[in-house]
Image (cartoon, rainbow, N blue to C red; front, side, top):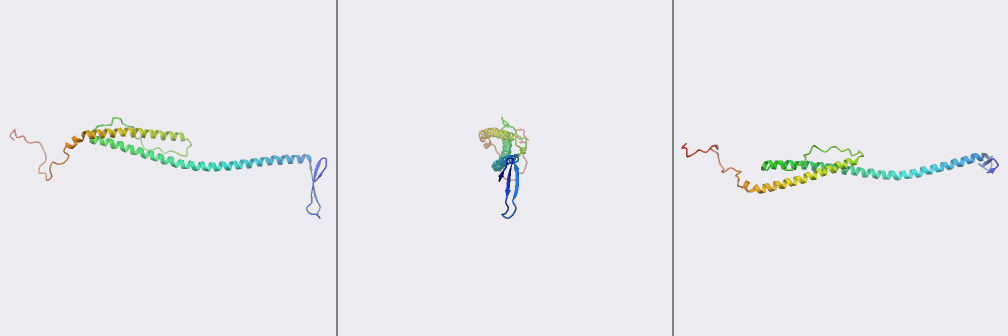
Length: 195
């Protein structure tokens, strides 16, 4: 490489017998090339660093998506269980009311709020999980209060049945005799009136 005051000369010898190629580059052009190359190397280094950082984030994102999918399945199962518990609690309340009618005990003193229908379909893809968790907590609180009220009601029914057990045991509930009926039941004929 030859050097003059204003430029650099580059000589390329392709083979010993062929004529050499000569390029002259000014000092100013060399400075621009070195500066451009430095900037290009820095930009490429930045891209590589960013690329490897994004690879790590993509792996983390895949793990988070898998965990979110698992949690969605668990939440849906949990919501189904809550819905089943609501239905079971409503059946227990209906059974309680039927038992009260059958035993002639009277209505419950503390009546819980009856169910207003099935579980609303929850959009699990919606990012607002605070409403979902609030809904689950309210449902659990409602189920807990219904369970406490139902337990008190069944305890009241048990006490009432135990207190009336002797009355029911002495009250006939079967036919007095077996066999054919020859006449229907009716008013008793008075022997005093001479009829």
